[in-house]
Image 1 (tube, helix red, strand yellow):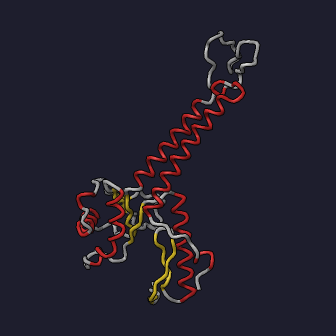
Image 2 (cartoon, one colour):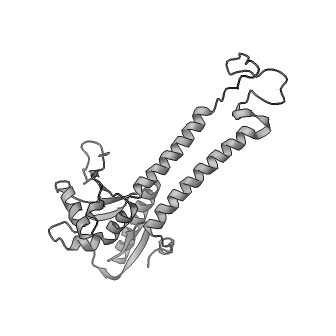
Image 3 (tube, helix red, strand yellow):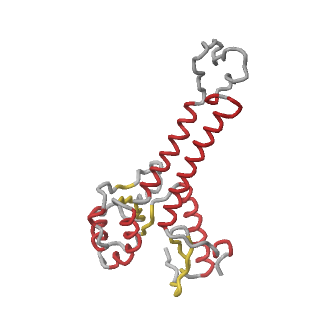
Length: 236
């Protein structure tokens, strides 16, 4: 029986996950700006400057000890920090939008004509015209001399709907091309935190299959599923 901690999982569709991430990032950015505004207005402290207060009876002092002229706006020491935080939040939001339109193919041999393979499958799915031209392998991060695994292939689409259709129909489309490797996998493009969860779930499914002595458990997106008719384990 599969371990209890893995057996109960809320079912989430990849499309739902992407939309939740975008909404979460938007809410986080909104709360960040709201917090900053409150911080600037708290206790009459303009722009968050610790050297300026509406209750002071003397001219505000800058960080280098010089006195400001009355009417001169005080310096905002935290401008760069706040700007960087907002910029990072915006960048993260944009990255999630781009990831929502990308699929990732795993275990595809690098000697193959990857673009031709992707176009064949996309055409079978009826979305060849929705492919973005920037199909590319992920940069290699493994040290020289180590075991070189086939790098993942990132497949961008013009819209999220086409990406989802590619993910949904990929396996059936692949079966129609016996000349293509049938062991390759596809998933959506994930964040680093999601990848950690994915790899952990795959390891748990692998251990459960070893314990069961058959191939029964597998991972789809971030959910462990089981086959109705388990298959024998493949020997390496």
